[in-house]
Image (cartoon, rainbow, N blue to C red; front, side, top):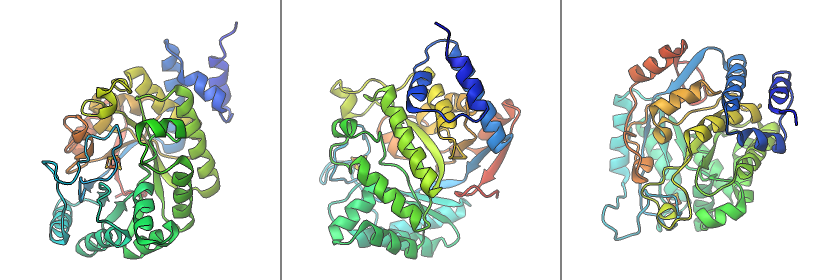
Length: 362
Ligand code: SF4
């Protein structure tokens, strides 16, 4: 039988839009054709974003690690009374924002556990406090799970909470809590989380309200290749309608300190081949999302650089004060110096440029 891959790659360069079946076939490739797929994705990247590698100067503010949920992949959350819990009050949030200003960041990213006492006003107050202390710094906050939780606790709609958050200073919403947008998998890895349908509903609401979001996937646990591409299809359909996604960020599963791995439900994360193909297929399948980010926090810096040769154009954030991946067992997640990013970009013959959250140049 003739190998369908070369023709398909040629067709993509000619403007063909991948189907789920074709995407699944490409993402299942296990031999040297992986490099052909990566090379095609790199050509598309060059056409869309040119010769740049971009990054954002950002800092995390995780307000609490206390969470009512028990997602099996999470090594960050703790139950009330556990050792090592924290909950920042307004004073500590202000201190973090002041630190962000001193560090000259352009983005504060804030996502937290679902604290049992939180409601809608907790989320708006966090944003308000950050915004007041650090006006001019873009607040990239919360995700559809937090929106659903806060709205439910306060008896308002998710749309109403989004409006309140926007008024308080929300610049964009995190597209996390997506994990894998296939309910059979969600029931296994995060049974307490919102459904695929609700995630999509809240993301669409945000986009309609003029709140951009990122898009993410968490892969390398117990999902199939077809599940990953089904996830892509949901994102691509949303983007066709709303154009509200700023970027796509594939998050490789960090397994070490997770219940899913301990119980033998998940494997020990994605392989290098899978990491490369994930980035490449993201670039090829998500033809309407301009920016594909590599997550050095999840894959390590060397693998992230390979992603930049396989379709990605963005190396993410400096990540002052990262704690979520660290909780799951990842190392060296605290901060990546732009000087180190420049070494990686220079090594590929590309130019490193600082950007804002919404991809304007700084
Ligand atoms: S992933 Fe989020 S919602 Fe799930 S347990 Fe961790 S902090 Fe809680």
